[in-house]
Image 1 (spheres, one colour):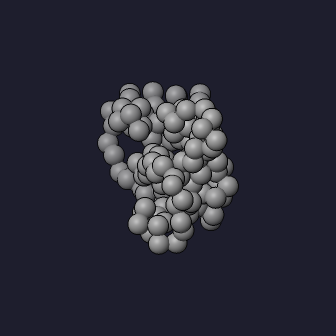
Image 2 (tube, helix red, strand yellow; image 1 turned 90 degrees about the vertical axis):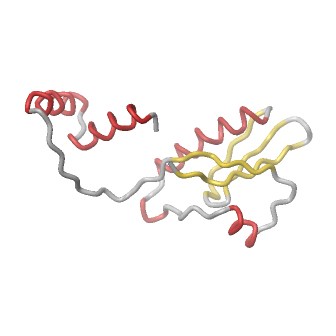
Length: 127
């Protein structure tokens, strides 16, 4: 799991706007700080999911961001984000019946065997 730096600005003591320096087109807002962070995580996940792989930024550290821009009294938060990675081939061994069940489930879901395995791993690790 990676973390993106979020800048949260309180606006007129009524709401909180959230922006991401590494994702300039991604914004969110809410009427309280907790909701602002939660909504920011949802907005960021959707934004990353829709980005072209060639436009995927490299996440910078807070120190790197501070070197390039003024933060102007921003509240700083680290928002978790699952960045897409390059597929890496692996070799595993499964019981033949488990493999057959996996293949049936993958076909029924309209995904590949690898996608079904990744889904199960995410669920097991809660990531």
